[in-house]
Length: 580
Image 1 (spheres, rainbow, N blue to C red):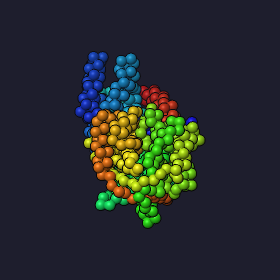
Image 2 (spheres, rainbow, N blue to C red; image 1 turned 90 degrees about the vertical axis):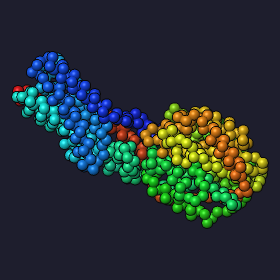
Image 3 (cartoon, rainbow, N blue to C red; image 1 turned 120 degrees about the horizontal axis):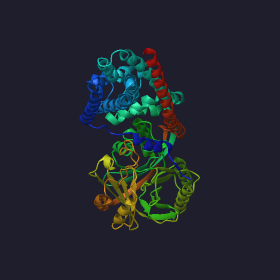
Image 4 (cartoon, rainbow, N blue to C red; image 1 turned 135 degrees about the vertical axis):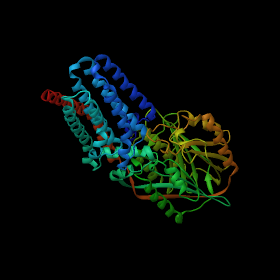
């Protein structure tokens, strides 16, 4: 049985609710058109309603558009003009629809319908602003009410009598109802983690807007300490820069620059050697809560330098197929390096427990077991390989088979070459900051290319397309991705080869392999197994609970908000009857 990672999949599904606001002139144009349509209709139905569309819709909408952003900025929060305009035109549309009921069907209730529309858009604006700007309801009351207040002042000139008294009463009703709804949305997360859901949403919006990393404070609050092994291969060449191939068993997520989202590039920048950061066995539960946790990985890796045992021999590569799993293995010095894939079947995250079991089993032959998840074939869903499943058994069996050949494979002098190419593509196109790296080994006359692309998985068939070209230059090869999430601000699906054609990538890969072949030289190798202590990760229990609570909130928010809205309307009708 396989399951989807709760945190990743729920974030993936919720990303459909995130969109880019249109430019403010477009929103302003729509707002003015809506107001003039109401103006023309009201004049035609009753000349006494002249200026209703302008005073009741256009002017309030423009006032809200102009004043909302400055009022938010004064409170040291962020809001763009585009979002302010979109909120204003959306509320104008809601107000028009509600008012049309009284304007067309029940003329005698026009005052009530327009007053209800002012109360409703006040509640909507309050909910939106506490979500995207400031979670503290009290600070958002005035920015939320500005459009309704402007409408109340303007229309009081046209509809005297009960309206000037009715509208403020309805604003109180709807404001109270939406405030209670906001409290109900916040309460579950606060009780479970002592964090406020809307404050977290504020931090998320701030990250999307200006790269703010306030979300890391929330993740640290729910995180768990972990002791995580990290296997590396140090390669030393005379007269050339040393190389480190390292395999972190933490996940490079959750997204963008948050947590370990840019782990491969950051880890590479912290070492003077050429460093390739492959993907180990770790699902989203093993996301780092903040970038500062990377320091613990760097420190642990540096501590192993004093215990390195150098040798200059390696075996020829071998490949093992067990079920859907294909495993490339090679003994390099005192390290058994294994690169696993299921491509053309989907190849996604492997649970940490499986990788840890493989490492522990391998200690019977050598202290250093480097097991890489090639992460090179994206399926329709984001899946995790769990312990006890058929696929997990295939991974484990293939790895054990490679271990059993440890003493059987003949050893030869090792040559290694390296190449690094900065690809001319952006994060939005699925390519991370590190670009393309190639490590070529040559032992016993057999060449092997380990190609690593800084990206989050590969589109279906891309691995085969690239590998076929590489195999015209070397005897064996595997194409890997780092699983960096810097290419994913929201969605988890931006694989290598989706936006950039594989045909465009192939020339860069073959160039990298050719450079690495030309760079070959006599090489000493040493394995390293670091224990990264007290690394704070998301944790399986916390992230599952968090995802469950968020999912529950999404389920009950619709019926609860509907109930609140119905109650506010009923109270509005009662207030109208009392006042008139």
